[in-house]
Length: 77
Ligand SMILES: [Zn+2]
Picture (cartoon, rainbow, N blue to C red):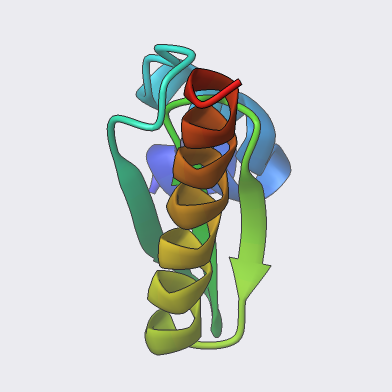
């Protein structure tokens, strides 16, 4: 239960220890936390709370799509 209390005290710190932020959108995670889902991306710029797993995954797709479009826009300049 020690892990759970760390998680509840400070989700942000937990994630920073648990995940390596690469600065790139290499991987997104949607993890259950109580009755919510905490969503995180390895770029370290995306941390949101979703009501359910499906909307978390939708937001993850939306996040990577935004980043991809931004990168493509840079390339076409
Ligand atoms: Zn990202």
